[in-house]
Image 1 (cartoon, rainbow over the protein chains, first blue to last red):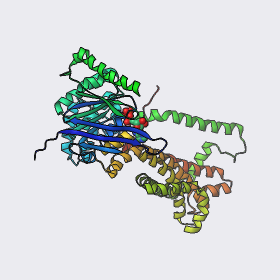
Image 2 (tube, rainbow over the protein chains, first blue to last red):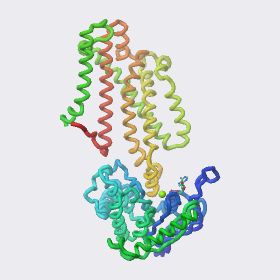
Image 3 (tube, rainbow over the protein chains, first blue to last red):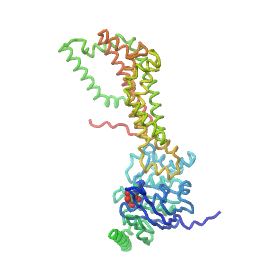
Length: 262
Length: 259
Ligand SMILES: Nc1ncnc2c1ncn2[C@@H]1O[C@H](COP(=O)(O)OP(=O)(O)O)[C@@H](O)[C@H]1O
Ligand SMILES: [Mg+2]
């Protein structure tokens, strides 16, 4: 049976209210409509508290909408989660300190009932992808922040989910490690052709990585702008190209406008 | 291996021996009323002179300590698992645990003796179980519940069940907490058993041995029995530590710092 999946993610009329009816009510998201094509790299950007993480968690069915709908691969987000369509990576790596690097990568596979040998093979393949093969038997505490994030990404990809959801995965890294990781993620994206939704609060990061930057505004969280980025193949010089800076300016303007309006 | 052990144990040994020496010298030089506090040399002499009797008493008390400790640890862990897993259990069993802990447990000894029989081991075992279970319960619960949001969300994104989250995340996360409580519990078990024995149970155990000797103003012999109890506590503590290291290979060996 061949299916044509038009949209990897399709969101309509989505709202999320926390603590509804209580004094500490927060309207985190309001009236979000968003469609993400399969294989796209999309960034969500906006000031802190504008609902980026909430939107990502709604896509990943880690929380549920107050109103509206989230469809992923033509099914409900919950079903997609049960079908293990998501790989997730967060600002903190979330590696389990009692598991070695290999065992961490094997965890989702273990839950899916893979055999020991299959798990081992896939973990080795993933470590190769993130260039950490020689650290297979190390424990997380023996690794740097950047290396841990690479392991976390390897783990998120290990079961070949169709969608990769990342919430400021490089937020805690220094600038140089960060740029290096960005290049690696793009490399992985090209190799695996995943749909990636990437939350960041760094404008250059969003522009460098994505084909599309979704600018969000706070209180309540809304989509303020949807900016296509067409910089072609990313290379070292991309970060110095005039088009790169034009895009950055465009995103910054969108953010500034919203900042003033709000 | 041996040399590392010696090096890590050396400071403690030096301080310990220094303290004993000070104790010995103070008593020998100042010579206060001898029965108030015998010098360590005499306690050790009495320890070996009465060794057969002390050994039997230690074994009998040790039985209460170990069975009570195992029982209390199992009770504490099971209680913690229930409380961390089921909301209803949390709402009912946590207050119950706190209430149990609020009872001055040693005060129950005479009552337990009335329930289970003056010579029955069950009464003293029960004291140890109740004494031990609380720190194990509190610490293990903390370890089972204090898991990062990121870790839980990751597991949910893998469509893991609550049971899988418990087994693969909560339990390993609770291990260091559990072992901390085990170390506390092992000392508590020795204290609980000996004090419980003051009130009943077998007569050839450390508690009665201390009471009898002290009653006959044989303080040196009483101290020798106390020494046996201390040694038992130390052995249990060291065993807990060894068990801890063996079951958590991911934890770094404690670094020896300084020169
Ligand atoms: N579980 C929650 N309970 C209550 N309020 C929440 C919760 N999660 C997020 N919020 C609120 O929703 C808003 C958006 O949060 P978040 O999505 O984390 O923003 P961002 O990731 O863009 O910084 C914030 O005001 C935050 O305080
Ligand atoms: Mg966030």
